[in-house]
Image 1 (cartoon, rainbow, N blue to C red):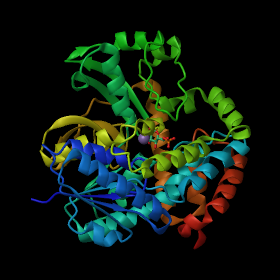
Image 2 (image 1 turned 120 degrees about the horizontal axis):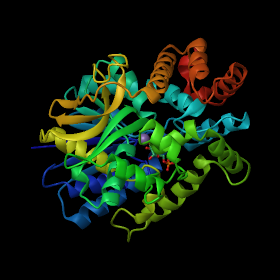
Image 3 (image 1 turned 180 degrees about the vertical axis):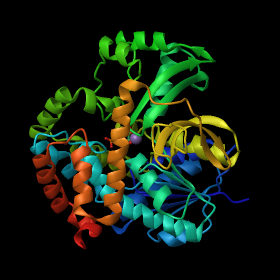
Image 4 (image 1 turned 90 degrees about the vertical axis):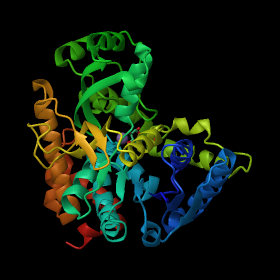
Amino acid sequence: MSLKIVIIGGGSSYTPEILEGLIQRQSTFPVTEIVLVDVEAGKEKVDTICQLGKRMVEEAKVNIKLTWTLDRRSALQGADFVSTQIRVGGLNARAHDERIPLKHGLIGQETNGAGGIMKALRTIPVLMEVAKEMNELCPNAWMINFTNPAGMVTEALLNHSDHKKIIGVCNIPFNMRHSTAELLQVPPEQVLIQFIGLNHFVFGDKIFVGGEDRTEEVFQKLLQKEFDYSPANIMPLEWSETFMKSTKLLPNPYHQYYFQSETVLKKDLKAYEENGTRAEVVQELEESLFELYKQESLRNKPKELEQRGGAFYSQVACSLMDSIYNNKEDIQTVNTWNHGTIPDLPYDAVIEANCVITKNGPKPISIGGIPAPMRGMIQNMKAMEELVIKASISGDYQDAYNAFLVNPLIQDEKKAKKVLDELLEAHKAYLPQFMRV
Ligand code: G6P
Ligand code: MN
């Protein structure tokens, strides 16, 4: 039997991770073919990754056919799973997303605030094309989307494309669960964090280990700084006792942009003026990673990859594909349709939730409504996301402006216009829908 995986954005420096994951899972998830797809600009990178991948396959003595192509349509034929990990406009576009808001005194971040909105506007139309092609060429294949902003992208595709086998993923819930397990010295499979919210805006409600409520203990240890679950791209900031005791919620690392915004802005402005924002750090990191990947002697995923914020994303992707393929019915945290799971959010909204993973996809588990302290915030974020999705399709200036206005990291009406105008200009090559209007 054949089992074919297509990786769109295969030239990403993250790819050796997912290749490693697929190689290691051969006994339960017997992949026979992997095709890496990229665009002209990524040709050299995808070739380097493919050569490294072949050495990894050889080293592991497994039987997987690995190739790369720029022809997405031919790659999609007969695919069983399609992982999407693209960056429209590359890291230069990310630098604009970070630097232009900062120039105006606003937080500039890849998936939050003005930068996150712009990334969605560039990305959604491209992935809509991919979904359309999947529906035609591999209608039974699942799309596992990592492309940020993963929640918005997943909602746009589920609600506006004909292909419905789409799941959005992120390493944040995975990291939170695994660090909690480490902290409590128990196997990660035993830890259940009840997540509630949206991608990069998800909270942990209660924490259970083997059915026992250990929330209090985890909060205590977090306050005593005994653990930290920040990925490499986010500065580890502490949460105060008052925040934890009042909200009774476990924040995710991205919440610092909203609830510790002054501190974050100060730090980011310093980077903006001095040694560069995250995009520029990642640009350098990528260069050295690719130097390493080119070395013939390298036959495994290098440790250096852990300097990227998305490290361990492959474990999320591979466990998900494995569970769908084997109808495992285990619990994983993914982005999928709400469909009544959280009654405080629209029925067709996409949420990040614990789901039972079946061969027919993820089935979200309801834990009831959103706790009062964060109900309004999450509803507002979802309304903002809805506006972004609308704008990404319509290419309408007013739709985009509305999204900027209600985003908690922008709000000021004059700044909203100034920053939006500047970003639209900087990204015009990647926003054909806005240029046509
Ligand atoms: C986190 C997020 C990912 C994001 C990554 C950025 O892990 O969950 O969605 O892509 O950080 O990392 P980078 O190394 O690109 O700054
Ligand atoms: Mn993420």
